[in-house]
Every structure is written in C-alpha cells, then in structure tokens.
Image (tube, rainbow, N blue to C red; front, side, top):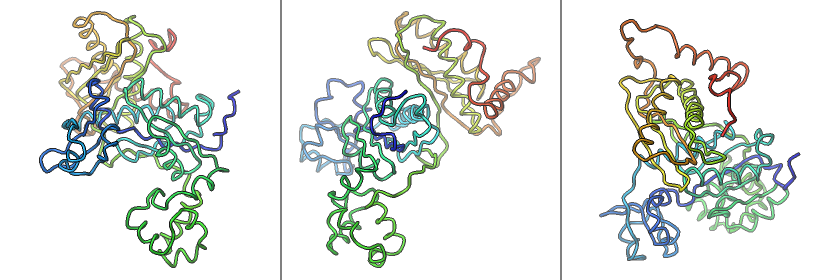
Length: 402
C-alpha cells in the first residue's frame, strides 16, 4: 500500500521547466552554468531567456538586449537554437505522457497533468511529481518545478513558488490560507491591466477579491470576468484537463527515451529497448496519421556523455520494424566510432513528419504488398480494444525490462 503523504486529493500537477531556454543552451556549456547568461538579445533584439545568475541582476525575458547588458555588462549572450528547444520540449512532453494521457501543454516548457489514474503505478501525486523531476533531469539534464493541487490555477501558483527545482503541494484544506494573503496580480491569468483595475477599486490581495460578493464583482468587471475571478480567489476553478500539445501545428517529430535501471553495454538489451521505443513512437505516429523519413537515436553513456546520430530514409515510414532496424544500425555505427561503452539512456526519434495521405512509398519489384505495416495496424487495433501492450513483438516477451 502506498504511504499517505497528504497529496492524495491533489490530482492536478503543473510542471514548469526552470529557465528552460537558458538551461537547454547550457547543457553542453558547463563552464558557463555559474555565470550570468542571456539567450537572444542581439542588435535591437529582446531577451528570450536569462539564467538564474543573470536574473539576480534584474535581467528578465522580454527585456531589450541593450537594457540587459546595462544591468549586467558581464552577461554572456548565446544565440537561441529553436530546433533544439522543440526537440527537448517534445521529449519532456513524451515523459509526461508516460505517466498520463491527460497532458495539457501550456507552452514549450510547461504543462498541466491529471495524475488521478497514475496512483497504482507510481504512488501519490507528490510521488509522481518527484518521479517526473528525477526523470526529466536524468533524461534531459535540466530541472523543473512542480505544483501539486486540486485545480489548475492553484497548481500553477504552487509551481511558481516551488522554483527553482522544487515541489509544492497545496491541499484543498490549505487553499484559502495559501491564496488569500497573495497580491491579486499573482492569480493565474490576471495581467497588469486587470491588476491595475483591481487596485484602483481597493482590491489589493486575493482575500480582498474573495470577500467581495459575486454579484458586486460581476458588476465591477463583467459577468464572465467577475465569475472567473471569484473562482480563482477561492481556488475553485477547473480541475479537468483537455489533452493538447503546445501549439495547434502538427508535431515535426515524435520520440521516446528510457533510462536503464542499470547501465549496460549488452547489444541484445539495447536492441530490445530500441525496439520498445520504436514501437511506442510509431504507434503514436500511426494514431496521428503521420509518417516520417529521418530516424534519430540519442545515447547517454554512464559518464553522462550524450551523442546523437540520424539518417534520412529514401521513403517516409511509420513501420515499427523499419524504424527499429535503422535505429539499431545507427547504434552499431556509433559503437564502431566511439567503442562499446556502458550506456545509461537510449532514445529514438522520427523527424520530418508529414501526413500519411500521399506519402505512401512505392513498392519495389517483387515486394509483398502486405506485411509489417498491416501487422502494426493489427497491433494498434488490438491495443485500442484490449489495452496497450496486450500484443507486442516477440523480442519484447523475453528478458526483463531495463
């Protein structure tokens, strides 16, 4: 039985990466981690992000590069790598979806999760939050903060207070004592204009707003805005999520990663895990109606050195066996180049995604018309009907999971 820790009634998590853009850019620049660093902010540009040492000088995202350097002349400026940001974000979101399908991405670097169905596997919401933080750090070498609460807005506030690299649980019985002393501007969704308007009418704290009768608040702010603000002030806003990604555009890539419970150099173990990850990725691709041409792998060794390799296929595919074959070939190339070493983490990603319609490959002369693609779709159908994992490649039936 999972021990009680007080978070059982808090099924909503808000996970927010700490200084995401700066942290990603600094992963391969350890010599700069204690130095003030800004991302972006070139000639007449604005700051995309600043790490925590730079923030101590007052540097903030959205600030002009000129103002940032005036506040912190010694800051190191790095140009942003947007493709890298998207790849890391996609990997982090996939980690979230390993916990729950109820992931509502809010931006590239933050998301809400409903973990009410994850208790049997991972424990209480607080334990889930700690597991996520450990996984994100282990797989991506960046930190995140997590707010745990019963509603979206309280979870968002809690993650902000947990920063950097922490967890804060706000249980339902603590919501009022936690919220009401706060400045009204801290409420999720209350911008500068709304805050200024509330201050003009004498509403300074969240408690001030909560004590105003709802009809009066609606008369002041409008029916919908007044009702919403009243819910925020009492922490009674929505507790259900709508699964969505960080934007409305189709994903450019899909991937999955796994950290071994024990570092390994066994090619058979690594091949099985690459197959497991390939199956997970291609299943998602088929569900989304996408195919892709570029297969990439990510390998992290026991000393945390991380290498990637990729190759573009002649034709787009969503077939598990083809993706796995290419992923393992890339692994063998990496072994030939870097030697056989103990591995901590492996990842598979398919890039250059496009809608399946119109992207079917041409059959080679004498090739069978039906085969692995149809087998994959049969597995998908069985999974939808009887549960994910009920049918799997025979290679995954032997050997323990890493």
